[in-house]
Image (tube, rainbow, N blue to C red; front, side, top):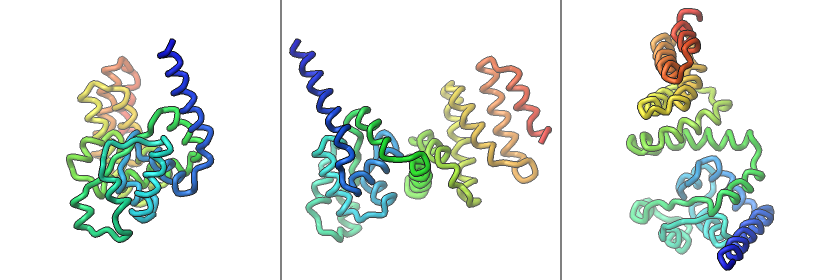
Length: 238
């Protein structure tokens, strides 16, 4: 009985936070909306870059959001940013390091989705994907290849520049192959299908053929034999 009461109490606290999400100030809401686009967990420096706010401001607002129970962090570095001067140097920044966060509960995360519309969420994802490709190391990109591909795919309506298109194509091919090698064939099919949407026969024959071949292999593995044959014929029918 005690366990049941404690569980109900915890659920009531979560519900109260959900209801009070509209009482957050503009920057706090901006942080949460941006965090939603970045992923299940996100870091201080990414949020600073995507929001366009100052590091000192975001650090202080993040502390408030954590104290309100919306986010969790296991890093102690946030206190340093909050106590530091508003013009923290690059040397101090490198010495202190980054700080990672996550939503305190899935219901909190779901409630925060009500603060962002689909177009804004797509734009956040597009910016997050570009930021990670530009600032992450090759090993970090490989570790988050699925998440980065999802970022760019969700934000594909904002992809217009040639470089961004090529990034989306390359990332989807890499994500698709990685998923295929892990026998996650359905996920791989999704990445291959998305990536080839931005290719045409005249300019990208080799890449288009690679996408179709890999997609066909995955469909064959999942028993979609007719669809696999269609993929193999697709480059010759365009």
